[in-house]
Image 1 (cartoon, helix red, strand yellow):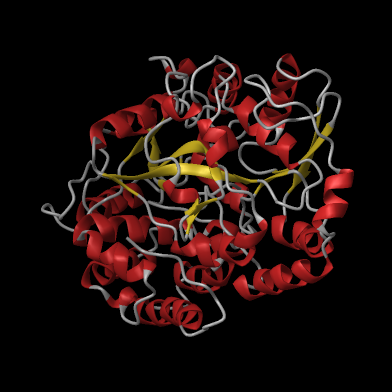
Image 2: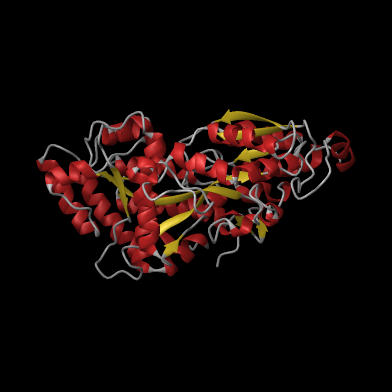
Length: 468
């Protein structure tokens, strides 16, 4: 899985929470090599327009890439593009699923990889390693492989999700659009339309039951996809005050009327059997296949990575299509067309890496038109690089609908990052699985989520990110 997240996203975050990362940060500071030792072991080349970071020819770059919904081959492809600029550079791509457990010890030891795709449910909390990461402003200031300033070739707002306390340390590569997904073919065959409000979704759930189907499905590792849908819906309904309260870890954030309104409907759906049973004990991709292949459920809330993730388990002529999440009422503070969208799949370059310059150069290669177009064509998702997706979406209905959602939202695009910033997605999976299984009511879920956030808020050892 990717979260995307939460991201996603995609796919969020740290087992054992941010304290572990903070401890790793302190330990790394004590045990890492000195700057003199690093200078002796780091290969260096001459800087130029074609080589802005001074990567040594014939050097090796180690890239640890989250092996989720997008796989790792797109970074391997970028590694074949890079030597066209700098002779002989080899990119060694290593797939990783459990990012924090596998890579935190390397931060402690002072020998992290040169480039990391810090994604997945075991993502390392960014604030815990903030001082151990390179700032990436120079990547965007460099020229692309096509000779244009990279900052001028990408979508606006790309730096924001990867900026923590004023430091731009994570380059999020994929333009992730969050929404609710369905089979256009199935809906057309039954005369159904995508719901715009939660009441409409509830009525659709009753129609699904009449056909022997369910409205929703969930898997145990992805139960918090419904948290993403909840937060997105609440922000659209209640406006920016909902997001700010959550981001600031307000003591009553989860009790906001907009959040509670959506939770009340979700609770009713669970009680009335509108979720495929057994999801809390089912591996997430198997659960997703019950929707995409078996069509037991009508809707699934997730990010734009879903088509690629399920391409081998999707019914023929499914025509996967997305729409903006439901609102609580017909007159929300943000229009229904508003969407949660942000650059996702955060790439970081550790300062103590042996070839940090090489890590940045891989990012430059990924931001080339050749590599970005390859990603969109093979992964059926847009990158942050503009003008790489044709009107037909390479034949992908999901990619076309993402483009349509972005266009329909216009300026009404929002994002939030408190879950990923504090590495609390894993903690939140437990109460969400209980809730979706019918073992916990909305009141219990509210209390559990608030306690998780309160624990972070009350811990003065955890640095808090600035909320705007």
